Length: 343
Image (tube, rainbow, N blue to C red; front, side, top):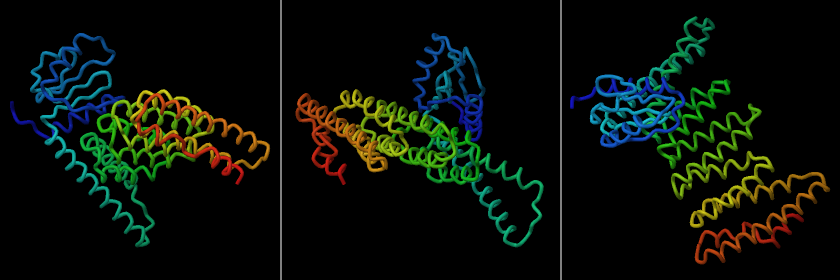
């Protein structure tokens, strides 16, 4: 097998990402697995054709006959596979391209700041277009790099720097899509989860469908929690989301999370999440100004608390010796709850 040019591989990967912007999952595949993927692709009908990039060409449809050892990328039904044979060379090329693009962007920004401080008021006509080109290059190169190295902090930070000057809501939605793509292969990536929180903070006061976004975020955590057990970082993100939830969403999450908790009794993360939801309801009672509304809410909260205690007691008796259910038996005992509501 001939040696592949890393820059050609990088261009091929970027072509695939541009040709299918709906790719929602990426994985790294051993060359031997391409045989199975190609057979399945040939047997199953699909609205999106199989794309195989070999070292020599881009092939569509009947590419299942291509030598698997020559296959570098596999893309079908918005799923992207990358051969493990080329990961190191591809990463080095992506890192070099990103660092070069970032250096050009920083140099340009430094020169523009110096020009402003020197008192020059005449802005070159090419300034805006040149800046757009450099920003686009940084975003493109950082995207590719992050799909190969999920915790490359400089790449995430460069995207924050570019996005912080933008007002277009769709750009931030696309950013959530990208970080979800990274999480599809690295569900415990702290940098990815942290970046999602930054994006949500940026759009929190600027969009009318924030509750819908929060709900989708909660579903994403549930999906990844199924894929990656004991995923503390994902559940920590879900706990953080609670502060953006409405009362109705909090109650809905309490109901939905019961079944998941029962099926994953050893995972304490969901118990912590339920505790956070219960405390959010308590915070709601403290913010009530109307005495009548506050009294009604407190009665509802006390009943909710009692039901949670009874449910935890049932779990403790049903799953004897399970530490998670015992430790989470109550975020706050009923006598203490009554005192907190009175205060």
